[in-house]
Image (tube, rainbow, N blue to C red; front, side, top):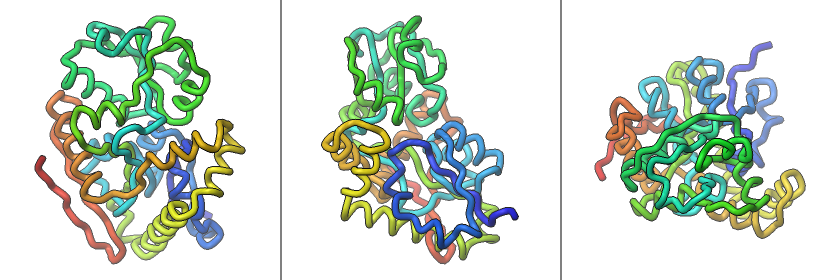
Length: 287
């Protein structure tokens, strides 16, 4: 039997606070979880194979006429993220004219790197996209970009490389927070499943709040399943934001304007939010 809602879940630890206490048993006969890396979820959402879920915020902009975003949910950070790293053989100030290998699992962070290097540093860079294997990526490139748990593991392994956190660089240049993923909904799903969607949205928000008030069980879970030490994971989740308010919105829409300025998007995008009751809010802002 086909479930009413197909819900995406990113295969990285950064979304776990939104899913950790989600009441799956309550919805087991009505929803199906589809777990993939961000680039795969982006494509599945665009093809209509997923109805709702976290996608790269860049992909949201590419399909903004077809999507709305669930209110108050995102993966954001104001400053250091801890899972989005540029690994470089030389200091970033010396990367003009360099060749950089990009992970094939990302959209938002790949374009964030291009904005930082082209707009803020004024560099000319050549890029190649590869599987997220740091050693292989650096065989023929000056630097490599990794995201998510691949990036966390690469930092943990250490090595004689210069390592730059892209959230930290973005904040240094702009003063803004950066939103890497939003929970998007295909517009045709809203009328058909608005009641169920409202319940799912409420359960996501409840999980987020419960995790925020007691991170201990989450930290123990990721420590057991992903290694590392407890303090490392505590710092990581403390640096992440899973809300989507004015602060996150302003930073994201500035990112969209930067992307459009560099030709990465055809035009700046705005974010429409969906809340319980089917209310949509256009969030057009100026810098």
